Each structure stands twice: as structure tokens, then as C-alpha cells.
Amino acid sequence: MSVRRDKIGVGKAAPDAPVTVAIALPSNPWIREEAVARGWRLVHMRHLFFHLPAQAAPRGALVDLVPDDDRVRRLLRRGCRVVRLGHFPHPDDDRVPAVLPDHEAEGRMAADYFAERGFRHVGYVGSDPWSEMRVLYEAFRARAIERGMFCHLHRFKTGASGEGFSQTAPLKERGFKAWLRGVPKPFGLLAYNDVRASVFAAWTVHAGFRVPADVAILSRGKSPEICEWNMPSLSCLDLYEERRVRTACDLLARLMAGEPGPKTPILVPPRGVITRESTDALGAPDPIVRAAVDFLWTHLERDLSVDDVAEAVGVPLHRLKRAFHEHLGRGVAAEMLRRRLEVLRDLLCKEKTPVADLALRVGFRNLAHLHRQFRRAYGVSPARYRKEHRGR
Image 1 (spheres, rainbow, N blue to C red):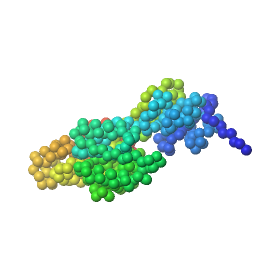
Image 2: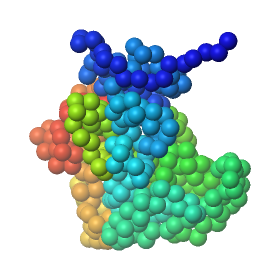
Image 3: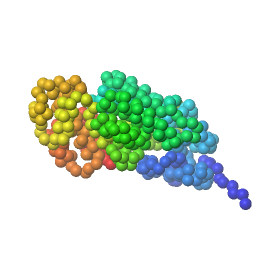
Image 4: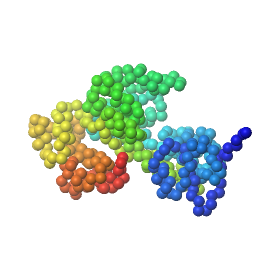
């Protein structure tokens, strides 16, 4: 007996019925939150193989499919408004509006992050031929040069058709290790996703180098589990997924209300960098700066003066100051403040401890001074930052 499946259609909903929005995306908690806030009823199309009953006909859809995918065309033919939550631009983005990560902003932020930590040599591993991530590398390289750093590039040869990364991994590992041995240390490496960052960290250790002391590794974060459960844990760019979802939902709501869509993708920049073990070091090669930074970072809770730091590392005060400005571009007190703010920011995300108690743990004894410096660095108060980033 033949079975006839209903095709996607757009029907008229009852006046008080919730708006049905179809989803063709991986599981995402931010989409659920936005749907509840907007009173939308979500229907996951992939579980139904894109054949929905008439009563579930969607008015809008959020997908990660390319615009010329047959399933997207079927939605559009039936009057459904579609927004693409994708990762790369597509020639048909004028037909299906897209909300994408801003790869150029990611590259610039990664370079700035390494520059602030005193690195003079950074690098990137790409594909040969280039994939869509060339935009990320070129922005990273341009900003690195602008900040006075040297940018090194290694490219993997793309395997034959049907040949994945695992099939060519031994060859890629040998090439990576040979390249890594030839770049000056300490070295900051940007990986275009967390899986590759995890692999690169393992290869780096197997090659006899330390992470992060010799090679600091920064990833484009996607999976908290991969980043947090790796050894060492992986620092990553926070791609601000919740903002990208919110932007896509705002756009879909406007489209369903009859407004025209944008002709070019909406780009969402990263929120910041989540520092974990893989970059928790400074890249300055000078032994005086390294010794002083190690002392500072270990004793953040103490009320230290610059003289205390010079005495601890056994060098004259003027020599310590000159080394910091030469290799980090900032003074000892500025590095102490930067590190205190960085540690406090991370503690705000992880703990519910009152801000005043956390402040003492990282050496802030004046709350007014703390709030002023924190707002200057991150644009919001500590309490507001905690509310927006808790659990990150």
C-alpha cells in the first residue's frame, strides 16, 4: 500500500493560535528561550523529514541549510519566510537572509588578544586550497602585522575526494610538527575550531613543546565540552551564539510581519575571549618579564608595589620598567591591573560569590576603583557583566 506524505504548506492559523516556526538546526537552548519569550511554537523539521502535517504549517523557519537547498526552496515556494543561521556567506544571501559570524572581527580580536599578552610571533593553520576561513586568516594576519607581530602560516593539503581529516592525519601531523619546530617561541596559534585546537595541542606536546609556555593555542569556540574537558583546557573566542540567535529571531519576526529582508548577511562579531589553560601565559621572551609576571600572577591578592616586584625578581627598578615597556608595551602596574580584571571577569562567570569578596581575592581593596576600572575595560559594571555572562 502506498503512503502519501503531506507536503509543507502554509495554512491560516486561528487568531489566538501561536505562530509556528520550523527549525532545521542542531539543538540550541537559545532558540528555545527566544521562542518562549515570543510565544512561538517550534516544530523541528528534521525529525519529520520535512513533511509536516497541515496543522503544523510554519509561517517562518530558522535553518542552517544553504539557500539553494531543495528543502529551503520548498519552504519559500509555499510562502514561508526563512532566515539562515549559517557559518559562511552564500551567493544567494540576497534571496534568503542570513545571520553569520563575523570572521574578520574574529581574526582581529584574536590578534589583539595575543598582542596584549606580549606575543611577537603568531600563526595560523589553513587548508590548501583555501576554504571559506581564508577571511579569518587574512584579518588575523593584517591585525597582527599592524600590532608589530610576525604571522606564520602553515597549510594542510586537502585530501582526495571522500578522504577525511582522520585518513590523512599522520601526514598532517608530521607537517605540523616540522613547521612548529621552525617558528620562534613563544608562539601564539589560532585554530579555526575547537576540534582542531584540541588536535594541535596534542601534536604540540608530542613534538616536545609546552602548552602554553612555548605555544599558546586559541580556538574559535563552539563546544564548551571540548574546550573545558581538553587537557589543557582550551581558550576560545566567544562567538556570541545567543546574540546571533536573537538577531535571527528578530529578523524572522520582521519578515513574518511583512517587512523586506536585508540583501546582505547580518554579521555578528565575537563577544570576547574566554581564557583557559591553553593561553594562560604571556608571550614575552624576556626572562625578567616572565619572572615578574609569574610573581604578579601568583600574588594578585597582595597589595604589591612595583618596587616589591623588582625586589622579588632581583633586578633594579629601572631595568624592570624598561623590560615591561619594551616587551609588553605597558608598565608593571598596568599588567597587574589587566590581570586582576581578567581573573575577576572569569570568576564572575563561574561563581555566585559577592563581588566585594571576589574583589579582595584578586587584590582590589577599593570597590569604587574596581567598578571604574572594570567599566572602562569591559563597558559594564561587574554585576551587569555577571548577569550577561553567567555560566559562560
